Length: 363
Image (cartoon, rainbow, N blue to C red; front, side):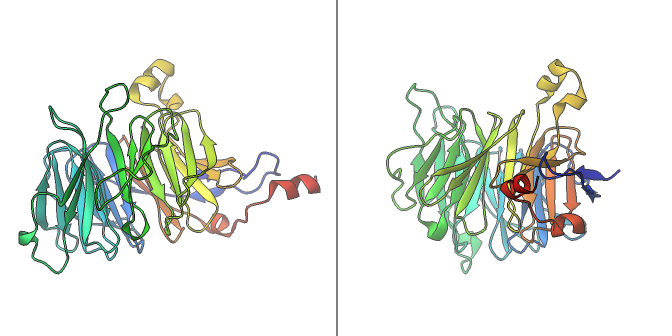
């Protein structure tokens, strides 16, 4: 059956629901951990706990190929600006560099602990990773130089710069959950499982401004930026997603839900936010059945913070979301091991968001 998006605001008169029929991508055997479009939006990359990332055609969901070689869960991946090389971060304590066209592993970069995230710098000549603490080794940020015009065999196994992540004020280890580069590689943006965000100088490894901010009370599960990196949105286990200004790190909006939020993305073509999450298996068991898990993608208005619709279909918490840069489709990956590729219909694409003040004036 089609999945419905409901009218925008509750005080609106009922209108035709938006209908979408998803393409179900069956390429993984275990829980999905990440879904990501390339810069042009014609390729979709996915990874899961089954160790083998996949690449798909975004227009029809056909699988192009896989990247085989890891021996642990793939926690993150990133594709370079021109879709020539792919980075993967794995629980097997390695980050790997792949040729996007052939699927060949160009280089493996060993770490001291499980690698939680990987991100290309602007220009795609270097990348950064975050790794978890392991035994006596601290959590680390590592920066590697990988110029495209050099032979991958000549790349150094060791990072150019390592930044040890300190424990919190109580002496507890704090794990990094996401890493990204800000514009023109001026800073490394890192989120943590205690709800914090820190910025680091990629040249000397020092923490910028010397202070961390705490947008959330619990773990930040994912962070996403708009295309020009002027806005970012964080999702958290504290049941909220928050929108921030990148330049001054000012809090702009909060999107509240009644469940953990595992991912949130910003639409490039509409003032819409997509949220995905849901209760874990234990939460569903203790709250009365699968229907209470609330495993749908939820749509919010970016400015008014109003939820106006949802798309159902998954049978487990949504772990990853991505919206195509062209704004015409989005992909969701969940604990059930499936990726659902949704294409918006004409009624959604042509929809104009009403202004609440105008609606109240008319009534």
